[in-house]
Image 1 (cartoon, helix red, strand yellow):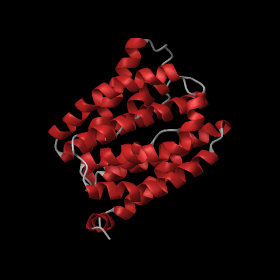
Image 2 (tube, rainbow, N blue to C red; image 1 turned 90 degrees about the vertical axis):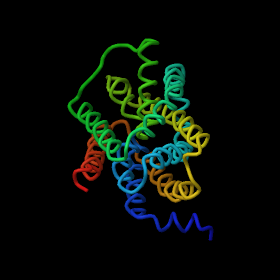
Image 3 (tube, rainbow, N blue to C red; image 1 turned 30 degrees about the horizontal axis):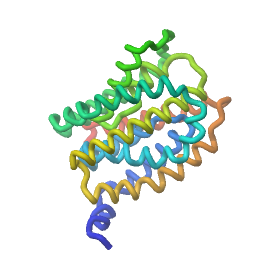
Length: 250
């Protein structure tokens, strides 16, 4: 066997990461988001942030294979494309910021982003306005920056775009397609910059298998009439991941 594969198998915390990515796949399957909010707090306990960002983007591409066809038919293509283009422009800046900060600071930043996002959604914060071009560009750019820096591609969109009262099916479809586009951009930038080693690629392969399976299960369980149940389950899993990943608990 390749030495890099054996190194991946011997990675400390691999079992926890496999379990966490499986839970994240379920949430992603029936809500369209939440993977990074669940995995990042756990993954950063065992891996450098650059590896976690790459893992989130690369495994996200795999899971999207199961969700994208239907989501593409249901999403608002114009709105999603604008968000994705502005996010793509800002991803390199997010990766640069990640390289400037130490691991502990990045973990605190990640925990704060997830915690604030979860609080905003749980408390029922809503934005009832309409998104014009400036708003879409700002939201997409923010998602690209935060996603490149921490792997958390979804929170900015969830708070400032998906938190308004809209059709749950279209929101889910928009999120799936937007995150898929952003994942591709992040992977491209990381590979171009040589930030991912061969061992990291093996870890991606190991995590992608349970993630794809549980994403398919989550997709099969999706029922718009049960959206309140999905939200409560998702919030609970995300909150548990955030608490377990707080640096103060190390």
